[in-house]
Amino acid sequence: MRKRWFSIIVSFAAVSVLFGGASGAAQAQKQPAAKTAPKAAPKPAPAAPQPSLVSFSAGALLVEKPAEYGESWSAFWILDEKPKTGWATPEGVTAPQVIVIALPEQTVLNTLTFDTGSTDGTSRGAKDILVEMSDTGPKAGFKTIGTVSIKDKVNNQSFPAQAEVPGRWVRLTVKNNHGAPDYIELMDFRATGRQLTRTPVENISGTYDTNYNDFHIRQEGTSLTGCYEYAEGRLTGGIEGRVLKFNWSEGEKRGPAIMVLSPDAKQLFGLWWNEGNTDAQGGVWNGKKTSNDVGTCPHWSGGAAEDLTKDLEAVGRARIYGINFDTNSAVIQPESKPTLDRIAGVLKAKPDWQMTVEGHTDATGTTARNQTLSEERAQSVIDFLTAAGVPAGRLKAAGFGASKPVASNDTELGRSQNRRVELVKQ
Image (cartoon, rainbow, N blue to C red):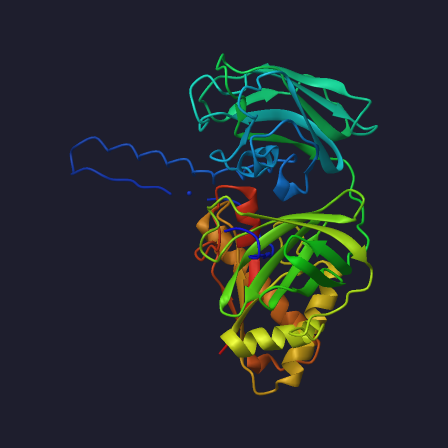
């Protein structure tokens, strides 16, 4: 899809964990007693994949680009955690190239991973790469954390970092390829480690000039609502740190999107998809803040409660974002209160509505744990709503674990979209 098809999503919260089995026998009389078979050791649950801290889903953005073949081969695609999309130089450019990535928080990286399996031709894959970190800025203060030589046409090539250097900027210097005369290509770059800081982000409410016309957004706590001035577009979503997750709708058309706030909080960069097609590359959406005034659209009232009511009246279902929980827990974090207050207000205004609160997780961890966690989180939402004055008899909790994904669980980007809560009108 090209321009004039904008969108955004987002999602909600979830996590993961573990479990195991046994047997035995006896023989006929006058035969030696059979030894009891040893109990099989419980199978541990698959370990939760460590999130990449240099990826778009973590809030990372490019601040210095190398030479690029075009938008579909931009260096941005090495941050999307999809090994089939990536970066390529223009034809004939095989000289060293520099890529600088801004991280959302001060971070230490301990493992560096590269993909070249889907490069568009033999010997085009990046080969020798210098990886550096800086806590000073995107132009200075860099210290080496890795000097690697990666193979052509191979994914998941991981290397330990050579030093622990705290920083906010990562610089890749791609020195060469494997001998092809036409392009250098790198499909994905990921890195794990730990974030050292957690910086509050100022309220992002305002108007943004975008490649899909003006975008008007209102933030209330962790909840986001808004509109954009093309095809009567509307959006609802939530914010976690510098990452915005949305659902967009244009009449009967809808889908998810995810956006990242720039370090200066003045720009947004995002990707959108049509519902059910999130394995695709995603459409690019950019915006620059032009005013702190939210403004409005003819088709948008500007009220979060009104938007939620419209969604439930139109399709009988609404994905709710901005309800955040403690890790691997059903304890609701305090910043989620404005979102839950909004839901309580809508339900009080519609006393005849019966509602199911659904919890959904990603596929990390065991089926049993995900099921339990989704049920507990749905019930926590109901407990808040009943304490706020919504009669318990109008509400029912339902947990679906990871059984109803809205995106692929192969990447953190997809998993973040699958962790969500939904309201369903009975």
